[in-house]
Each structure stands twice: as C-alpha cells, then as structure tokens.
Image (tube, rainbow, N blue to C red; front, side):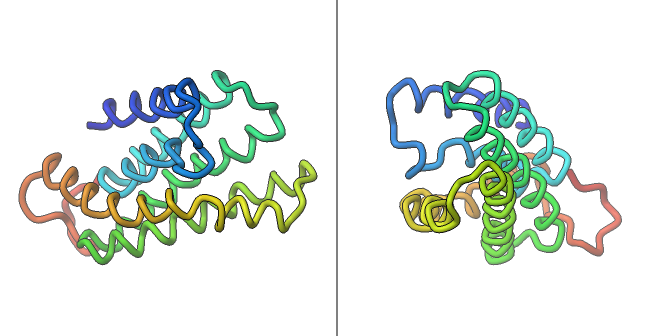
Length: 168
C-alpha cells in the first residue's frame, strides 16, 4: 500500500497539470501524503511526503520560489498526519487528525512563501479560501478512506496509542 500511495502521489499531480486541472482548487498533490500518514502512520506519511515533494521539485514547471513552499507543505502533511494519527484511529479521530495536519501543512507553506515575498493576505486567500472545494473533498473522503485502507493493511482492531503492537 505504501508503494501504491508513493507512486500515485508522484504521478497524480503531474497528470493533473498535464490535463490543465485547477490544482490550486482541488489539491491533488495533498492527497497521497495525507492518506499515507492517516492510514499507514508517520513513517509512511513522511516517506510519501518526501517523495511527492521531490517529484514536485524535479518535475514541475513552477519557479523555485513557488515550489519550495509547496514541497514544505506536502512534506508537513505526511509527517503531521502520521504523527497525529497515533492518537486515535476511529473515524472521528482521523477527521480531527486531518484538520490538524491541514493546518500544519498550511503553516509549513506560509513561512517560506512569506520569506520569498508573497503578500500575507494573498497567501492566506490561496491557502484557505480559494481551495475550499479541495479542502471539503479531503475532509469528506480522506478519513473514511484512511480507515478503510488501515483496516485492509492490518486486519483486526487498529492499535490505540496505549497498545504495545507496532504501528506504521
């Protein structure tokens, strides 16, 4: 499952760019790192986040000052989603973990974007208002999908934070 998410994370954004999709609205680059972190844990979220960030840095047509904040963002999504998902594996908990990871990722985007000179209000609009359809899709689809994937990867009850069973 990790390798599938890694490949999808690297290919889906490039396919969306090739189809001239409105990526800043539907956020296809965010899906794989968030899903890997929520479903498979922190190591998988980090791995997919790094792979997607590198893929974007190497394969995008955007200038570096626009790519670096995006790379920081997707890396942070995977790391935060995986770290937060350790604290709860139910649907409601995954929903809250996703919101937390979205906020961490957006902060990880905001800092380098401001350093490269992006105006604060423009950055905030692009992070929270323009992509509302993508954010809504993520909040609606990713928690149940992550729960389903996690159950397929390790059948049986999912480990809680107090479990001694290895996670990830």
